[in-house]
Length: 622
Image 1 (cartoon, helix red, strand yellow):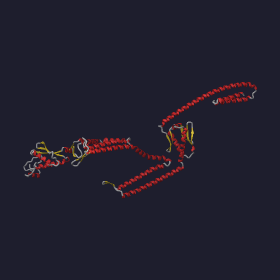
Image 2 (cartoon, one colour):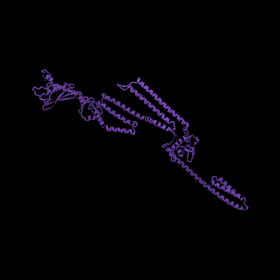
Image 3 (cartoon, one colour):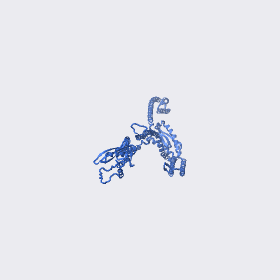
Image 4 (cartoon, helix red, strand yellow):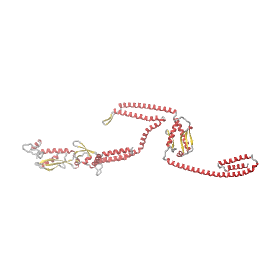
């Protein structure tokens, strides 16, 4: 009995002071008490003779209990040490996890600006973004898997909204639909979104539920019936619009024919009939047909995507067709809008060059009219100089505008430019040489428009002078085109320039025998020159004796003229006067080697002049 009381107090002490002890110790103490109670029950039937032995045994049990108490205290201390070590380990793990999470969050923040999330997009509607990969599946694979799963679920029969639920695991959360996983949310997903996994799951749940409900509603039987009715209505409207457009344009064609018969007039430019009423009517009808085709095409462009967009199965095709139609138009409009600043720069450059050229043209006209005189700059230089400066200004303008032209940076545009430049450089060597020669001729001023010149064996008036060629009109009205490079390498005689400044000397040679007095020949030649129209009286004509031969003498008559254009006619008139005067004076114009025996042979003077000469009172008798 005493033993039971002792064990009971020990057990109460363990419970009171050792509540933090290990449960195995408490269990062991209970077993000891139970064994004590069992031994007490067995000792009731023992005899008194065993009391002494019982007392001894009680003392041994007390010693044993004390030993057990000491062991329990030792075990308690060991447990406390283990608990402390476990707490330290947990603290270290929490600290390590916190540092790891902080490093991951820092890395995610650094990648956030350069990493684009993959949208979970269902029928063009973006539900949410996925940034992280999981289990060897990239973010794009996860988004496509979720998208495919939602599309499959949306095409099935209607289920309850409760079919979508969350399944919480140790390191991730699955959002389920029945037995199928819609998406798995990991701690990495939560870090990218800046929330916890549970908060992120709570955000995704209503979005997914609403989308599944919408997909099921869109794939219901009544929606299919509505789409079919709408498809038929659109086709009917398109057919009616086609009929209406064709009817209106047939009516317009009849109005054009009536207008032709009543009011349409031909287009006449000066005396040339450019377009008669019949051609005008055909042009108007052709334009109306073109307009009809354009309207029908626009109607098709609008209705075909509309028809395809009615059914979800062809909705993507509708968007693609609409993209093919709208995207080029959008690109053109965007290109035009983006090109407006460049166009403004081009206009500014063009207007600046335009008004500079206007100012230069005004100065050129003033110099040509000799209202503005510049020392050393001749009036006939004004127009060529203006043409050269204008060409250089236009070249400068093109060089400035070129970078702002659309497509100037493309390789095709640059390749075409290089190809054209290569062709020009290879095929324009002669052209460039003529141009340079024309440039030199302009400022050398060997002749000008209207001058009577001689280029090698070609004689005529200058009627046109360009940077590349010069055109002459001969006295036979022949138009001769001479390249400027040829003129640069040929001998050029300007008769008009000499005639204007000094007076052009025309001359001809006459041979006479020594029997004719030279003074008489001089007088007759000078008189013939003075009687010739176009010969200047002052300075007077003069005669030069150029050669003394065995049988004759050479006389050269020289006369001044001011109009070089009439030189051929003046020279012809001079020769006629020489013949008349010499015949009148009784001087035969025969070859010096001709010998006439006056044994009855007639004189070589024409008969009319011979009669005058034989008359005694003739004024030509010398």
